Length: 412
Ligand code: SF4
Ligand code: SF4
Image (cartoon, rainbow, N blue to C red; front, side, top):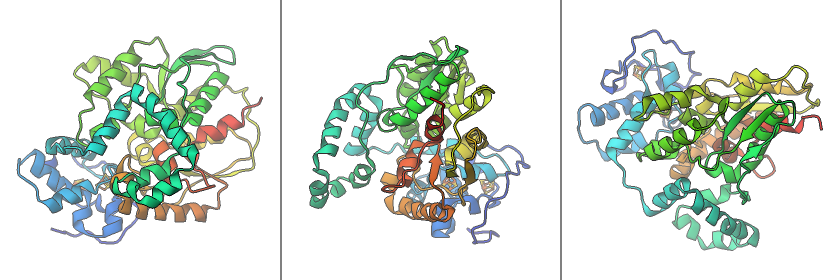
């Protein structure tokens, strides 16, 4: 049923938060205020691709215990889990949680490739074993002939392979001492894939923290945040409990994350040990917020005349809601020109594993974002989420983490 909603796509209104809090899927008012915020509605312009229709499907699964049709399943799976709909719902519906619960109930049996990917994400030893092989492959010149065989396409690996850069092979050190008078000690969340493919960002984070007087621990017992598992109907409980146990055992002032996608997941950790999860969440901060709060007045960065456009990942805008910290932190660089990328409210299409599972939809959203990037005339586009940065990087135009820009301007 399509009620009174206008089919046009408008910039979503600011969050209204005026209605009663209704966490149950069955209690959605079907008011339609979430429709225009949804990127899949923007692509398809049909009611089946709106949050409220998905909530209807979720209600069938979770509340009415009814089977859903193939079409309903397809439209549900088309969701990017960007959670833009949550920010405009007047009744505070927790769409992200409801979606994850529905996926768990549907219990999708992953194929062998997905199983392999889940195992690699979970198992640090396997990754350390695989990375040298991957590095040899990426250096060998075998990429082009292998692509020509079409094998990668057949295995649904072509998109993943095209995104790969050279991985870091060595593990991070356990401890990085402060390079200024010591003010405290923090633990850094290093992630799973990002630990190998976004090493530069992690090293920039360590350099900045050391420069403002913080020792950094890069705990080897930590693991994947669990987001990919949770959003794909798999249990993330083991990964969550492992991280809570590992970080809660440390004597640190804070646990910091550098990728907003992981940060969004970590900030919502729940566990059978509620107190332990609460302690974990209390000490968890986004690194940009932490650096901004603890930046010493006397630390002056070198000037730069670069023009920077800021991409705001959905995990930052819609879950962490701290994107202003990025702009404020970048303003520490004298002379920098900083602006928001147009259309920041629309998901770039990366969506965790979405860019691999739904390449056509993801590609359309990516193209819209590229238009905004081109129109910005920026020298550099920054994004606080590794997945978005990789997905939006093209050839020589690499989308970078804002920490890289900051670390380069540290006085030597
Ligand atoms: S999810 Fe919220 S905004 Fe969307 S139709 Fe339901 S009550 Fe309205
Ligand atoms: S999470 Fe994003 S893609 Fe999914 S229904 Fe909400 S707005 Fe649409």
